[in-house]
Length: 548
Image (cartoon, rainbow, N blue to C red; front, side, top):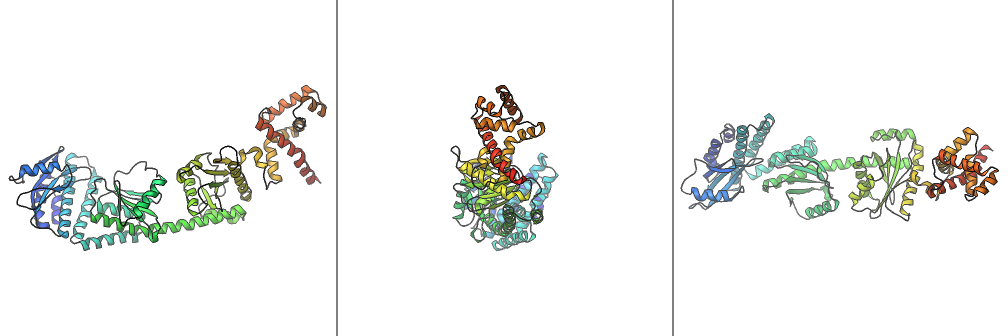
């Protein structure tokens, strides 16, 4: 600690290097053969370097190109060049010899001295270049404090491990969560630390060089990575990261990793990562339990809404889970050909819906997942998000008409199922999103239709004509119905209505203008013909029954 104070007490790089060379022997059976500083990209020898082996040592140090490595010094069996590295650059080298094999504690002390020296050189270079502001100086003081704490803890391996366990236990006990774990790991190792969920989405990052935006995970590669890491004990290197799984009781809840681009991690770093994962496991397990409870409450409320429930109770329960049921809602049914409607698939649907901005209550049935959402889904956004999540496009989504009251939700659920079934059994594209209010004639085909649905269909296609007839005491709907009954024949239609042919032509043109439908369009013509038939036969009988 006295040496640390001395190193940080001067801003002269040569003096810092000299102090380190003078005190190498205090760490163990060591001697300082040479020292170098990086000046304008070149290694400059210290004035304290010996002259006997100067050329050979200089050449070897430059050959290392920034990496640590052995150096040949005649008469001494052990000599090594140790890089003095800052956060962004190499500040120099310290060439250390040893008379005998050092112990693990002595190697730890030497490594700590090297890190202290590098940190002090970082501060000196930063001050000389005047590129660091007050925040950076504060960070360096924090780094010095952390390094001093390490100096005490690494006197012996057992002491280091005790300190590490104590730190992680304090983080867990403080309730700081994932960010507290990554902060502690970054302080201990000097490497960027991060937490991802099991699907590869970032939850916390501490340290520099965070990607922005963070890469979108690939489900197939993520599963392969989890499988490969899970087969090995302890942290595993995956490209430039050291990765360990957070999996209490065997279930993977997340990934804890250190970004080690320069491959500087030592045994202490690996132990810190393992202890960090052990401290993180209870936190993620707790969050998982909370999520499961919340999901259960959402599911129970959604189940009750789909079967019908008391409005006052539903509104109170929705407020408790943070969902606004007072807004207009839609029912969305999701089915994927290669996935069963189990818990994991329901979670996948929930994540995809959240990713595209849908606020939903979610539940599942035997072969599909149901969302009660507070806004009309985009025509393709949810489908595309699920295609990315599942890795396949073989899925179908059905969306109901808008629902303005809670009592309508069970009926809207049937509509969403109808939309899904129409898409699945269509002769064209079986996969994608289908909206019930865009089905046209298909809305009234199939089981389960009632008077209200027929009336809605008729109102959609004939409502403007019916209103016009009521206001102007005309017979536009009757004219259109008779026109269809006569197969579109002008003469027969005019004769059956007892009007002139030109009068019929005028009425048909007015029908086009009022309704906005084209009688020459095959789809419009079919829907209008069915609507007039329902209006004339089914609804006429229903209206008569109600009048009686």
